[in-house]
Image 1 (cartoon, helix red, strand yellow):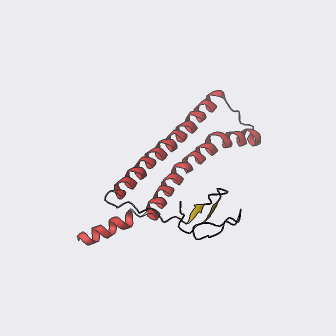
Image 2 (spheres, rainbow, N blue to C red):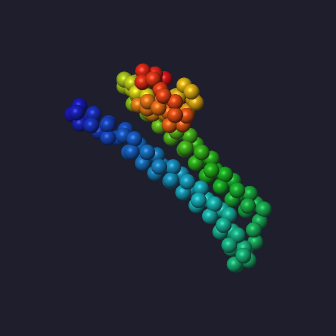
Image 3 (cartoon, rainbow, N blue to C red):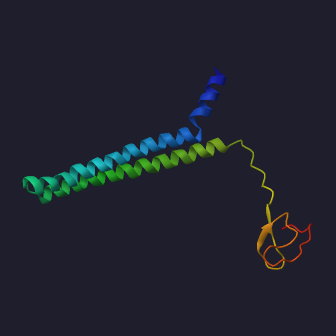
Length: 136
């Protein structure tokens, strides 16, 4: 049972699964903004243009408040997800050894100060001969 739970934890907290879950939740929250924009602004304008239904100030204030509520809901959702993903990333990094720094692949020419391959014996820019033991 412990092995099963460990495998499930590794699967559920993989980057791809976590990214997909965040994407679905953000998309759902954004759908609320789009629906609110359509229902509260675009539909009344279309009704005014096609059916000559009046647009009142009270209706626009109510619609604006409903739209603003959806935008705030989206921002709160995005912030909470950001905090969760950050916390999960920190938890997942606990106990992992830091990676060793990579071997340098380039060095700086002491004459023209351009970056060149570490294996170069002559600078391709200024054509100066380089010492093979010189690595920066």
